[in-house]
Figure 1: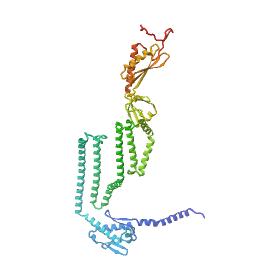
Figure 2 (figure 1 turned 135 degrees about the vertical axis):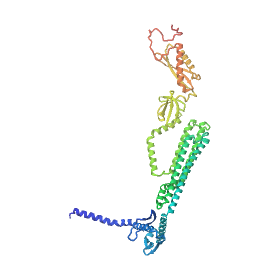
Figure 3 (figure 1 turned 120 degrees about the vertical axis):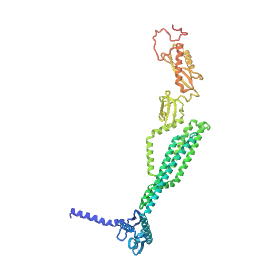
Figure 4 (figure 1 turned 30 degrees about the vertical axis):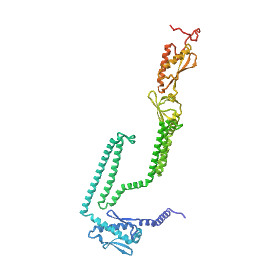
Length: 532
C-alpha cells in the first residue's frame, strides 16, 4: 500500500492531537494548582491555592478582589456586615446579602488549617483592610501623614547634621592628639607612615563610615515615609530588603565566622610572638652577646629574615583553610591561577633568591668590601636576596644579579686587608746594564715614600723574568686600606719614576732596540762615569 502526502499529514496531525490529550491533565493540574494572591489596594490579604467550583485560583482571587473593592467603595455598608456562614460545601464569607468568597475544605487542607478558623482569619483581614482604606480618605488622616512626614524629615536632617559634626570633631581630636603625643616621641606606626598620611587615612575612613550611616538612615527614613501612604507597604518592604537584607546576611556571616576568626587571630598572635623571639635572639647574636660556635655574627640578620619568612609561610598555611571563602571554587581558581603565573614568571627570581642565600652563607664579601666581580671593581654598597650593588671609584652603581655572581669569579680585596694586609704589586723592566741591587734599592725607596704603604711587613722585590733585552722586577707592598688601592697605585708609580729618574736608571717599558758594534759588554761598569 502506497502512503500519500495527505496520509502523512493526517498521521502527523493525529500524533499531535494525541500528545496534546496526554499532556492536558499535566497542564490542567499545573494551571489549577497555582496559588493566586488576593490584593486590596496593593496590600496582600491572603492566597487562594485550590480551585473553587469551576473557577481557577487566579479567577477566584480576581473575583474576590473585585467584590471587595465594590464593597469598600459603598460607604453605606459597614465592615461589620461581613460575616461567615457555614454550608455543606464550605464556609461562605458574605457582605450583607452578597457573596464575597467561599472557603472550601480543600482550601483549608491546602493551608493546613481548619476551614472555620481560616474563614474567620480571612474575614478579619478583609475588615481591617476596608477600615484602614476608608480611614485614608479623611482630612485628619492626611494631616497626620503630613505631620509625621515632616517629623521624619526633620529627624533625618538632624541625624545627618550630627554625623557631620561628629566627623569634624573626630578629625580635630586626631589632629590634636597627633601634634601632642605622636609628633615628638614617635611610634611604631609612625615609623612606617607619616602623621599626614595617617590623618588622611583616618579622614577617608571617617568619611566612608559617615556615608554608610547616612545610607542606612536614609533607608529607614524612606521606608517609614513610604509606609505613611496607603497601599505602599509592599514597596516599603521591598526597598528595605535592598539594603537591610545584605547587611543582615553580612552580619549573619560574620557571626558564623567568629570561631574561625578567633583561630586565625590566634595563629597570627603566635606567629607574631615567634617572630619577636627570633629577632631578639638573632639581634643578640649579631651584637656578640650570644656566641654560637660556627655561626658568624654577620649571618644573624639574613638568618632572622629567613626564619621570619618561614614562620609567616607556616602561619599562612595553617590559617588558610579558615579564611572566608577559602573552600569556594572561585577562591581556589584564583589561587591556582596565581600559582601558575608565579611558577612561569619567577624562575629567574627564585634562582637569584637561592643564590643570594648561598652568597650570604659563603661570606664571599660584606657591605663596604672592595671587590672585583667579572669586569666590575668597586665597593659593595648593598646585597639582598635578589641583587648585589657595587659602587665603582667613578661613583657608578652597578647592579649585578646574584645568579650572575655565582657564575663568575669573585675577587675580594678587603677580606684580609685589615688583618694580614693586602699586597699591591707592580712590575717594571730594566736593562741588564743596571745593577739589580740598585734597582731593588730604588723600588724599595719608592715604596717607602708612598702614603698608605705599610712598612711592616716590609716591601719586597721579585725578579720575575730575565727577558731578551731587560729584566722584569716586581715590587710588592702591603696596605691596610683596600678601598684606596688605586690612589696607592698612582702614588707608587709616581715615586718609582722619580727615584729612577734621579738615579739615572732608564725604565725600558716599552722595550726599545739599540745598535751596538759588538765591543761593549753587557756587564754593568762599576762605577760607570757620568755621561758628559
